[in-house]
Image (cartoon, rainbow, N blue to C red):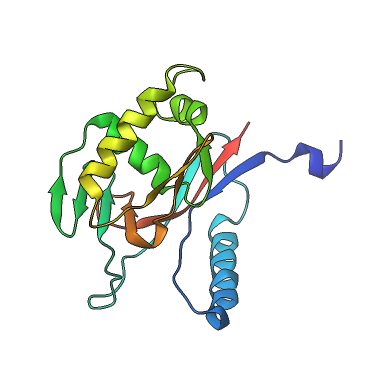
Amino acid sequence: MTSATSRARVELTFAIRVDADHERAAGIAARVVDAVQHAVGDCPEPGEVLLFEVPPPAVGAAVDRPLRLHVPSRRALLRGETLDFTRLEFDLLLYLATHPDRVLDRDTLMREVWELPGGHGGRTVDVHVRKIRGKLEPVIAPITTVRGVGYRFDGADQVDVEFTEHGHRPLATVTALG
């Protein structure tokens, strides 16, 4: 057996969004890759999950996005005002916001958000999208209907999704597979 086949497989999931000019983007990407490689070192033990975080921006450097989704508290704030979303409305908005610029059909949304197999009431998705839009518009309109297909989240530049208690955004999670 070669050493390549005896190594544990590792699943990496990255969620990185950095607003930078074209000249700085390559340098930022290289530093992120170096940081992850340095932090991971040897493969983690099977089942071990490593989480790398990027600290929040310095005071005065924050990007002023109109919509903020704070996942741990399940709060949505639009220009600082708390919005009242049901559990499924919040989950649908979060799913769309974390999959921007991709057309997602109703079956995919039913499977991923409602955890139901496809073909279970596409109208349910339509109703929830309509309710979300009613709470966000006219301030922002980040959800686009793609006729005959589904929905696309076009508001990545208008939303800040916070995944941890202190507002840090996960840089990467590493899970070793057995």
